[in-house]
Amino acid sequence: MTRSTKLGMALIGLFGLPFALFGLFALSQVIQLAVTGNSTGNSTVWLPLIFGIVFSSVGFGLIFLAIFGAKRAQRLNRLQVEHPAEPWLWREDWAQGRVKSRTKTNTIAGWVFAIFWNIVSLPLAFLSAPRIVQQRNPAGLIVMIFPVVGVFLLIRAIRQTIALYEFGNTCFEMSSVPGVIGRELKGQIHARFPHSPDHGIHLLLSCVHRVTTNAGKSSSTSERILWRDEANLSSSQLFPGPDGTTIPVAFRIPLDAQSTDNRNVRDEFVWMLEALADVPGVDYHDIFEVPIFRTEQTPAHEEAEKFAVSAPAQAQTRPDVMTVSINHNASGTEFYFPAARNKSFATLTTVFLAIFSAAAYFLLHHAPLIFPLAFGFFSLVLLHITLRLWLGTTRVVIGGGTMTVQSGWLGGGTTRQIAFSEIASISDRITAQQGGGSGTPYYDIELRLINGEKITLGRTLRDKQETEWLTEEMRRLAGLTPKSMTAKMS
View 1 (cartoon, rainbow, N blue to C red):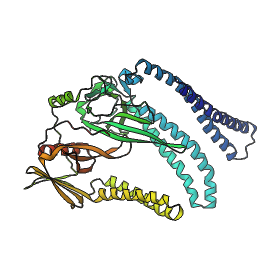
View 2: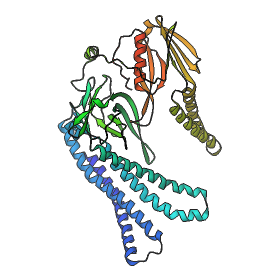
View 3: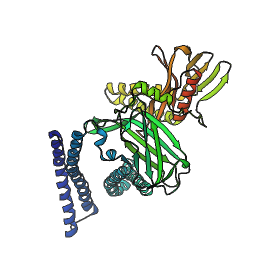
View 4: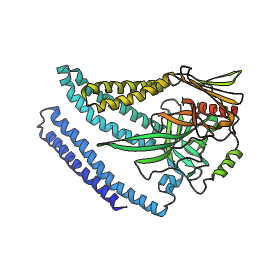
């Protein structure tokens, strides 16, 4: 362990010590009041009790973190020295090839947060309620929002606990460690299903860029999905296992993928394997952070192309429900991307537009000019995005050796004709998302010309299967050689 790490752990422990001492002092006052009977009201006992529990918990939590964090840092430092070129051996469950689910960790964190929230909010709301009723002040009702949020946090923690109890302490057993870029991630998820997943299992493999930033004394973490692949397994593809049910996993990892990189906890690249199933009661949802690295087994570009060509081709299946209209006419095959295809996404951006616009208007009359200008600029950006989501359309016609692209509003816009000989590739990539690493990505279908110019053929497609089918169909009609599709990492 480095000197800076030791100093950091010592500072965390010293920072937590005053909180722990103050909490113990407040709790001792509560005990003294209870023994002597000098309490003259509920507030006399409740306030020091709340402060005692909160401050002592924070203080001892920081001391615990400093002690055990130092031991963990020592172990990690030893593993890094022993295996400098094999970072997948730095984490115990990765080294064993049995990746632990995040369900248990999320459940514990959910309970800790819910308990702390309610310890603070419920007594304060209880003590404030008589005064709010007496004064009949509507603004005071804002205080009652906090215990309501606390109830929802408790419900969420209970549901997480039920899921942990029903599905067990699940794990992903890897066929080989690590997952190698340019090859396949294979393995089995071991879970317990009290009720058979009759609708099958939905699997997701995502590469996520996780960034933590500071703004003053607070910090925020954002997750951007760089790449995602999906697979659907029917119930017949599942089979019995040692823990109940075994879910087979197999994903092809693109050659230009980003390796797992968690050396900087504030700027990480992580790979997340998710499994979801619609079952009676609490739905099944597991998340595993899996090790994906570039190793000696990563194929060269030429070898990867040979592997892609020799591998059995998996034809994309046309989805039962399409958001894109496809017609055949004298000019060829027409793909029409209508307006307002993603109403939920468009509605969300509209809400943000309203909030930023209202803030800009308010700041225009109550703040220096720089603030309304900043909010006004973001409002204009959101206005453009919102109008495109509600009104934007694209029409692509492929036939007769040419591709005609018309992009604009409500079926109109400029038209451009491109010869097949000018086309280098057609691919899809993630350009927007809702939520974090487990959220919903939206794809654009992009045409790249031989001269390097890029033209968007379709925007904000939500369904991965539809996106891949459309991309493959456009490639086929344009006479391009089929290749395994990969998203451009950036």
